[in-house]
Length: 373
Image 1 (cartoon, rainbow, N blue to C red):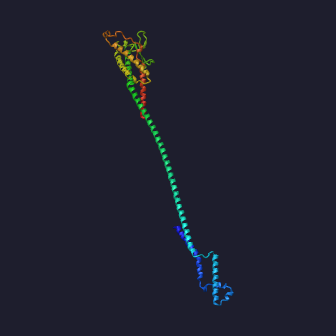
Image 2 (cartoon, helix red, strand yellow; image 1 turned 60 degrees about the horizontal axis):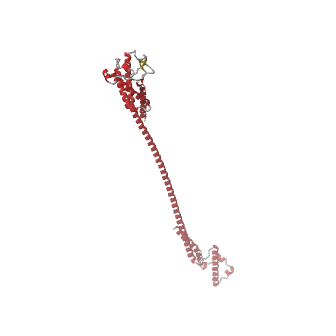
Image 3 (spheres, rainbow, N blue to C red; image 1 turned 180 degrees about the vertical axis):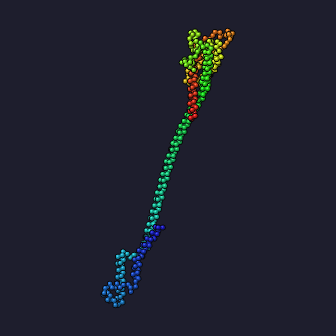
């Protein structure tokens, strides 16, 4: 629309410019004859011409000459103004040229506008494509980073879970091991060391009561030596006068059995009780020897010695308990010969007591540790 208005304006300007000289020429030719030559123009005529204007022909001739001069003057003025006379078709041709020029200008402007619009749309499309490509690149990078971080997080979580499970399994294994060890120690305490120490202590207490009775019955043959370095577990040493050498020596029940049992010294019942307790000790040692602490191999050796000792002691007791008639009818007519090696293994008491103390200490630590956990 703007280009069309511009073309019309150009056409109007061109028509006005062409039509203005023609209007001036028409105005000059249409002037009346009486007013064709103004006063200033007549004053400029030669005097001879003005003086001879008496007749009518002369006047007409003069008027024609004046018109010709005026026309020459007007033509001269037109040449001076740069506006030569144009034919009648010049206006239409000028208008047509102006319309063509306006159309061409309008088409060029419309083409330029359309081209700029297309270029702008193309630039926008390119920019949009770049933005979309950048967004896709950013999204791809973000997804890749997110995936990498997720994989790293999952891997770290899996590692932490594996470490936690491993630690938990280790703790569980340790707990189970501690529980198993605790139960084993309880079994060692309740089935071997506890009963063994109790029975040994009971046997030793009965044995000491018998020693006191013998000292009271015959102080010339029996005595106590307190605080002896070679004494029993309680630090006392019970001695008897040797029947052969007449010297004091350690009393050994298995060696000196015939001198005290059945000799009316009032100790037979004590010795019967010692045999009964020995039977129970023998049962514990035989049945529960597998519960001995792994580093107490020496205690196992003491078990073997005690079982041999008890076997001989029981035979002596059986022989002494038989009546005279039974002895004659049995194979026990010949007294049993006993050596020092069959005596009671004194070390079994200290070994059993040491094992009991160790177990009690370990169980106390396990109980305290369990309360802390």
